[in-house]
Image (cartoon, rainbow over all chains, first blue to last red; front, side, top):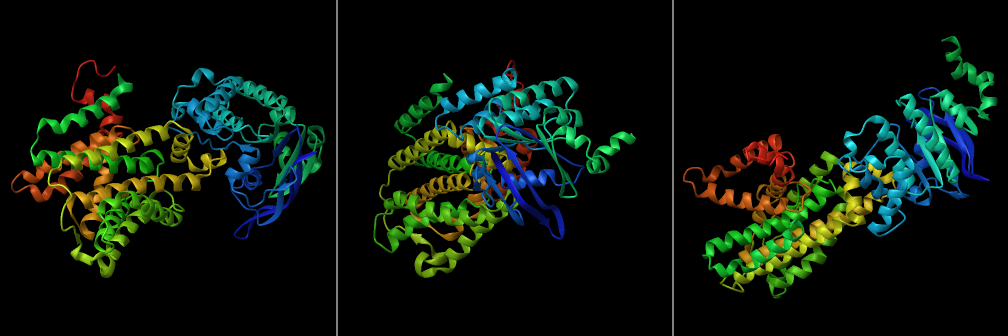
Length: 240
Length: 313
């Protein structure tokens, strides 16, 4: 069953089409990879789904409910959480407080929020850093905090925007395990990633964008053998 | 010990008038507590929620004029101004918030600054309602003695302190700080930033308005230049919180003590009196450079700067 349904979405900035007539769906329980060269419209697509942008044309449905035009906080309440490519921690708050603030979405009292936050930071492995002020965290942990915080809103669909970029190999392996763990919890994931090995190994399906248009969609195997994709994107790797 | 600090301070201030101070000292104490209240109010919006307002005179003035107009036009006791200003100023803040809260950062600051000035000029010109530049004078004051005024403003300040403390330890407090730290992140974590900013503005405005209504009763005279004053109200409010400590519970109190005392001392020095605002400006620069988190926020750093041994641990 499709959880998220993007139908004919276009997003214009002035005369420029950042996204042009893109349709795809995210099925319940899967990890959907969203790839494409820089400027292909991946983050714009997240901003449309999440409600930061209202698409110029087209519609987005979540659980068969039209969510186009809703504000980000309303979209989040419905069950779509996201992380940011350029991490946005609540800088002068501790890691734990960051997570508590987002856990409050589903509960009223501080005790309940702390309980959710505690469970979430244990799951993502930030427990030992809980009292640190998030401003001083290294990038790897800030990326992890982004995921933790999004997870604490108890989403059904998680949008991950380059959560692996800039991580060292050890952090990368750890993050992949976390993503797999999130999937096992029954959360559907849509992920933007440049790291081809990662995206090919964890995605169930992949959508490829290029210059704002969808040029391919399929399983990792289909995508890696698709000649249009190879030409537009993967080809660079072969030449290198 | 720390936990009981508010109660100990409260007990101390409750018995203070029994020391038999002169009228002048009582006046200073009342001013300190009034400015603490305004500082607490500003801190809620500017310190915790991160919406730096340069126009709190608007709320102070509307509160003050609510009390004044109830007296001058409706022949009611100006004390009604205190409960009624809560309603009026909340409404006023709500409407103003609809306009200014669309803006962020420096644009918000400028819009609030303008709103204070708009209120001052309007009140000067709406002569039929406000009495214009002549202001409103209460024919008789409720008490000659200062003691009751002292206890009334003390009660208001204490209520404000505990309400803010309670709020900041709850969901709403987390949301305010989240908005301050990153509005886009807060929004995408499911926080209705427009709603919570409006709540912060209304609470902050209403509390400032109550202080304004008290001011009318206490001073017995208001005019647009005084209660809508950009320097005397809006800027001093920010200074109190900056000096005391932004986003700290005790910052507004510490800031109010310092600023009120400093103003009194400087004004009493012959030949220097009129330059007190210059000195305030210099003080603000020094604070921003050396103690950006204010005296309370940077208390450890301050202790180190003045060389108290062992304080740096």
